[in-house]
Image 1 (cartoon, rainbow, N blue to C red):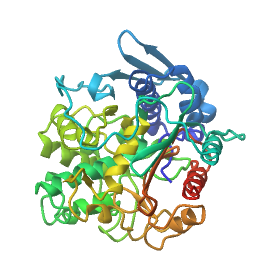
Image 2 (cartoon, helix red, strand yellow):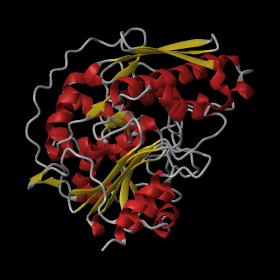
Image 3 (cartoon, rainbow, N blue to C red):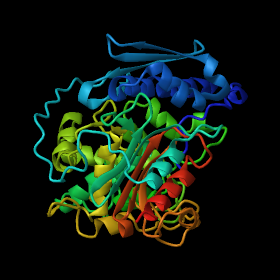
Image 4 (cartoon, helix red, strand yellow):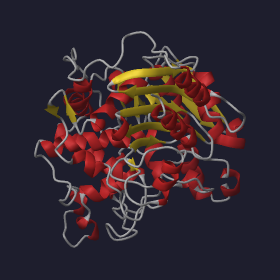
Length: 458
């Protein structure tokens, strides 16, 4: 499962390694400032409530060493770590929040204009959709229950069947329009943007990745394809973003995401850990390199990339409550930092439920959805595909999910702490679950039970 990006409970054991302290403490403050900034100024929730529910549990016993200050007038959040480091995250409107670096990001004017009409028919009216079936209401009750510790922290659930919302619910402080962090579900959005570029004939997933630093055929990384990056089998040794261990505060992947000014430039310097395709290692560095490819094809700036994403994807799906965040050089943080309403995450899932076609318009290439859901070798414990997790293919991860109630044809966007957009073609179903779960499997069993409950409805 995608790991919490900042498990810091073991830092006291590592403080003797003075050369790494500065990096680790800046990862901590960068994480706190960025997530609080996004929650406050994008999601619109109370920052102190969000800190207690979503940030403090990741810090463990080190929580008391971290301080933070929210300045609503300036649109920024400052976080400090025991006097050792400080980070400041700033809200930039349509570009979301960014951890400030030196030099600061180039100022950009973002003028998206009025969104065109959606190609996707409305999935619900303006009012909350209460389930009409008592059994479905009971199923939602179970998803929001808090039986004890660790907390489950569900904030939003949307169930779409037959193209319409049949049930939804939100935790206090959240609502239909709340834009909620998707964490690694953003990787699936990166998949969609790549698919659009493939359909437009601008890139080939089978070709060597267009990374200038790897252009020399003698460079072993020259063989890495865009497909390798998307499937997490590139071989790049740029940390891991999957499981928790006592050294994760020092993991290169976390440093890239919360300290580095140019995330893709950091990732492209990594050597190979194994030959492309020979093994599997889930790391955000792969997706940040794909994000830069998207940026370069879209026009080279954050404003141009956001305009491309809105024009070619978000607007066509009717996704009106969505914020894609960017690093200091204008690359979308396509590994982890898109926020969207639960209904908009569901609209995104419908694109894949309908084979990449919306109202007769093909957004994704023919065969792209099957490609995206096809199992990647060596990811057995997890059942990974290409920017999605999948129940297709014989993996132990898929077998576990199927036993818990997810059909064998299901695949999903999945993010840390329990973010899910599950697509089930056989049931004409999309289920979205958002929140900050610290349960061992990030509330996977609860989501599978919900799908089984919906499948049982007559």
